[in-house]
Image (cartoon, rainbow, N blue to C red; front, side, top):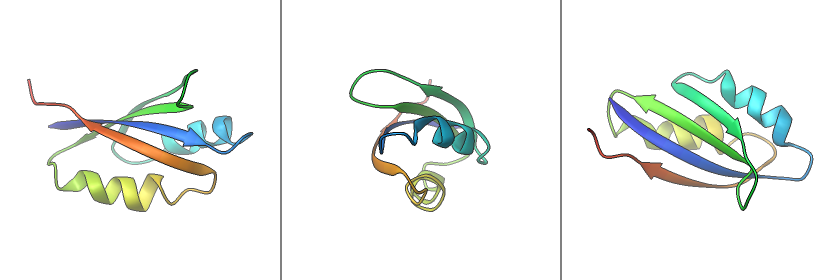
Length: 77
């Protein structure tokens, strides 16, 4: 199991809508609206590292209202 944390910056006014949309995506385990330089933190859990780029590109970065993302892949424990 691979975990990735996605730090998301949204366009003004889009955060709450995007939280609900991202919460419903496959392989998204948790989603939190946060304060600071990022607006949303999402945790993705996938079977392999190779799945992560596709999830990011096709399911998250393509959503209207996403300004930018930063991804952090956790080392397996």
